Length: 146
Image: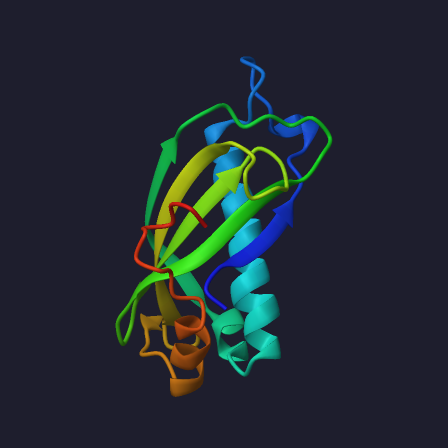
């Protein structure tokens, strides 16, 4: 599979005084794409436990161009950069539009930790979760050129 593509729609209320999507709202758009992958696709492919607890341990966001809310959807490409027994890193490439060749506005990374909510502690991933995530491994480009 390699790269998961999510279509998310910035809201008018996401824009700031400068006319582009505010940082906090950009992070929310990344979250929407991540939820579609981990919870939606995860449940369909035997990794439903991800929906019961996964936390963001680290977030890095790089802005390359303003992200604009013009009423249309944008394309968020999500792929797996790295995976360990109890963490994984996702790469994001956010395009101003739906086409793969639309300009890249934002690149980001999140380090994710599967979490046992009942016991309030991180947990190791199951084999099903690891297999699911491995299918979305990037080609080593760091999210560039998705």
